[in-house]
Image (tube, rainbow, N blue to C red; front, top):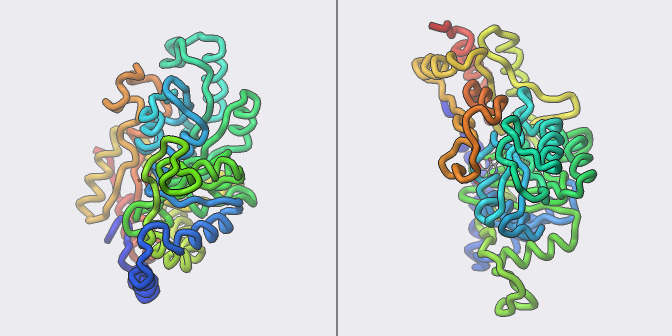
Length: 387
Ligand SMILES: Cc1ncc(COP(=O)(O)O)c(C=O)c1O
């Protein structure tokens, strides 16, 4: 059994992928070929926004979004410590300062109440033990909100807080492409939304790729310039400092092919998640994932929580002996990473995040997961007996 099976999907669409890759070989426009316009238009339309701009990775998408927002050294960005490093890494890379905000224990997404508390404490300059890392920092410019494991965060509340305090919002939708909240799709929240096409993502390519989405024409124009070394009116006119952040024509071709089955794959993921829910039920050993009523997850991960932190590694060992692959996203929160020691955080600063990091584990999840395999997985989970 595989944790993520990309081969079954490839077999299904192999002829189409080959035809599209051959088309790139034939026209030879490996950089900024016609596939890029096509995938940008297709995915912006799917997400319900006016502009989609392909780029080299989800990390570059976040970097380009922050650059477009004019983030520079010393600026403060609020974000979550329970995410992949890239979310806060891009902030530090620009010389800006990530300030972390704790998460909701059931959705793993940023807790709006904790966000408000952090902003108020920063306003009053009262960096204290309860809200560490915020002493003597300027007011935050913006918030990077993460839709973890495929579930869209609580933007109704977060955007209201951001508006009240004059901050921008960036949606880190690297894990949630295709998810829904009420009638709004992932990648349509915030001022700019960013996604990743890393192969393991709900919509992945065969290498690295990403996209920025926005309804803001000006931001889109700036990001298009930034992804091409700050290009102005032509290739050798540079009006700002940018990066080489383009997506390849080959990757855009793969995405076009994969997108043809993507809506169906989202349904298959949903069915697989529902099957896990009913197989696992309520247990005193593990907690099943909670999807809020207004949300439909893209199920990038199906993540359980061990009832006790001390059981998590025992469960992982137990699953291993039954040859069921598992993964832990994320075992070490960002505020405890060596890369962020300069921020001055320590153990205990974000109790909810730390508790989740010690208890979560993810099960195999992909659209082609068979019922038999899901039964094997569920049996393995349910047969766990703590030592
Ligand atoms: C939440 C989150 N943000 C950003 C990224 C970065 O995306 P990429 O790997 O395409 O650079 C990822 C990728 O794993 C992610 O999960």
